[in-house]
Image 1: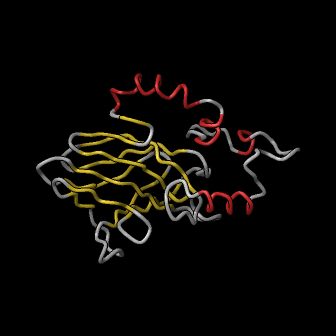
Image 2: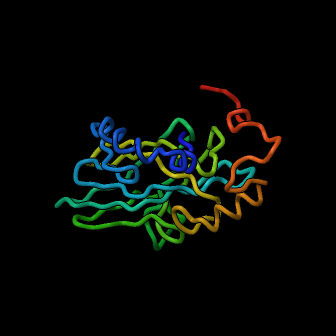
Length: 192
């Protein structure tokens, strides 16, 4: 997982251009866009689980510039057990693929279609990123890095939700308080 905000604040943006050149073969156009066939995944993000919960919601913008329809049929990662795709905006309780008509954009967002990540195996830290694989029926698989936002985020990079989350968890934008252990000491070093 990547600590997005620290990366950007410590000059990571200067290295991003170089890194993107190295990872171009993996399908990444920019840090927030990923291409596979005629599909583009833009601004992937998720709401972190509420404290004590083990599920999260995933959102993004999916573009199909091709002449044929496609479908998001699966989402997978070693960090969670499975995923439920809620692709029918009129019947969100149903588990159905997300259909991408030709020459269209489908937005996964709170209140609309989305993906629920279930049985999260590791703590998903707000402000970090989660690598996962999206599986499309025709275009195939694409590995993405989704930003992890606060559990009540209304949209990607929701600064107000992040501020509420930090305040509720005794953090602030200036970094750890005096006496706090470094971030890596808060997590088990478990490479399962």
